[in-house]
Image (tube, rainbow over all chains, first blue to last red; front, side, top):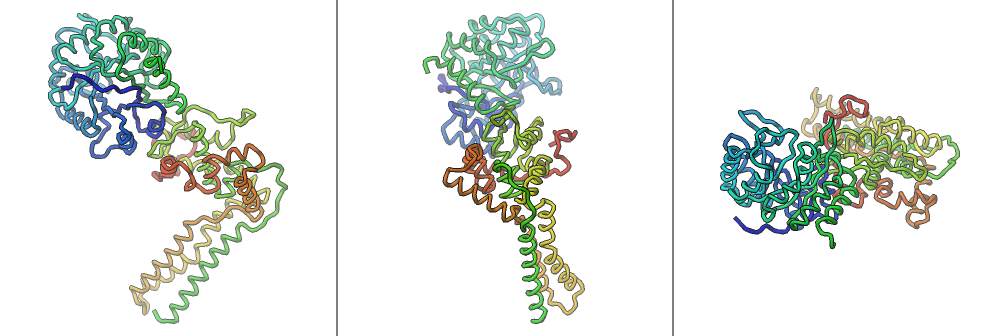
Length: 272
Length: 271
């Protein structure tokens, strides 16, 4: 496993709906693609074009269910490994969550209890997955609408121990930190103070919306100012190797996406 | 088939083709007209250049240019939430209809949008306005001319097909070949839609094109519109779009759903 990851810069999530936009947006230095949608033998023309330009394309998985009690599905890990190979990616990622259990698919990234027992299961699953992957694995904190009772660790402590025991990299989603602060009262600054930011692979930034008294991680709305401020807090602690804008629906005009990328760059590269 | 039959066949084939071409020419004959009270706008130029579908292609190109619509490489079109207005703050009726058609989760295939917009009341109104001013042939006449122009050729192919089936002294392989050739002529003729502009409309188009070339087109708004990709598509069709990936995306031909066209339909998001 390599000890240093490349500098990625500022990027955006590649989606088929905005393929031409992503190709033409100024200032896009890397992109992320949903790993489950990648077929190595038939990459979309747009991704091939980006790769030809030397833009890193990172596969981001959503279905490994590393936090689940079931053993890791080796075919899903193999698919992620194949995607990394096909894209020439320097790393891959998934979430600290579970998406299935007892044969049922949740269709959603569900938070896991922050107990030592759960951490043991998660560590075992992550080590299993890492053994099959050709590149480093980064894991992302998720947004939660509910919290499991009897937590033994804060989210920051949970992730710090996960990193220590597996050597995995961190994909910090600052919008998810904001969501958890809004809905669950978590302290995002405590999170940033606790996790080993020297293991930071890159950062996710997104937008959300209030709905029926809860704030939702929609990826369909503009990045709110408090999230950019939180990104600034992270930037004070460490220079993130990469920051990626996630947008999955209600895509705005190209100019608005470009402005969002410029806002992110202004936070992480203040001298630019 | 003997030589006499072949001569008759050739005469009928040539006659049918000449009839078809004449009918297509005839549909754009000069008509009664009202005086033109203002210069044409971009979509009217598009209509005269290529009919309702050209208007739809032009509108799609224009709204993509203005960031109001986004097209993916697979030819799926999404609204971005932007609205394009003229200097008085008005939204063009064609643009408004196109934006309404795209207000569907998941987007809409470009070719379906073109089909629906070309058949919309907004484009129909635009066409009628041009017809009243003697600049364009009535759309119904154009459609009829397109079908009727190929009727003699289809008839000839049918008659020869009957001979083939009945086998009346026929040389089967030769007859089958001639049926195919005749149908090929008919299909080719049908592939090229008749022109829309009358001689008066063609003169107006010529003036617009001349002015565009010399950069002196009045009014300034039309000059600005004609200068962009939408102007090039209006005059030359999608093939004239200067941006190759966008041209390919907008030209993609996929599913055709005639049942779906209007945003009020409950089947809007079924694609």
